[in-house]
Image: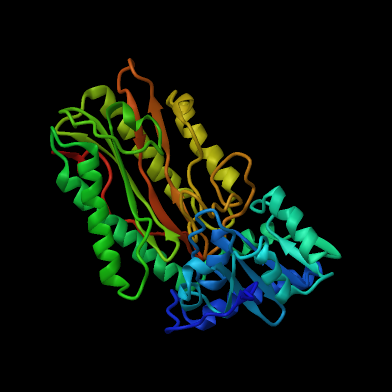
Length: 400
């Protein structure tokens, strides 16, 4: 039997996170970058860019996926194991490649790009092995790294994106209240985390009944486990006086949002209270700095000075905030919009950024533990809008 290298399998109705006009606007922006750099076709391979420009958030499981954008067409490429789901969940065309023959993925892509073209690729994502195959099968006349331009585009959110991010922030608050209600001595971290996750997934399903549901999670840390911002959940049982880190992360159509709060179980000692209040003060000061015309480095410098005056800067472990959009813990970070000393990006209206100072006091010292507050803010014409609603600070978050 003769088997095809690739084919189209389209069935069902298109269901996308945004209207067609949103994707057309995004593609128009990409094509402007392509024209400026003389690119004939972009071969996008990352989860974040394929999702951003097509709506399709792929599940790789070791297989390659892509979206090819030319000046006239947009086509996603998926494996046969997914059948027609990628077509239903993408804007534009979809081609399924088969695994009857090695590298049919690249043969399918070639059927759209044609040989000998100027190809845009993602230098921060495409592996050396896949780049070798791109060169072999597409025989490009030149290659151009399009990743920086796509990141710059993703950093500026559309009104439709901001609406979805608002819904995500509100969903994170729902998870936060479920977590706070579950806290009491003797309860395990995993039990508290599941309460928050379940509440958020139900809220997402209520708000978006036609969506796909995946990747929503909670990191809930206690005691020594609070020392790192990304420490996984354990089965440690909560004790009276424990410091806690509440971290709720709803995922809606590839868009990540977050709520992070410091709490204590039933009581907080004096040393811990001092550190907590200082971090809350830095959080409020930092939020007041987020406005158009200020660079990420300038915001960072001022918060650094705030902590240095209190002899706390030595306990800071990472930057003070980052961009939001098509993002998760395994794809999509927009490194050009982070509150760090080495980022000179100037804040502009339509950007969305967190403020999240964290101090980690080592074990054995008074006030030991990790303190972190996290709000999401939209940069407006004259300042910012905080879209996080869950309260922070000792007045609200000594619980259990």
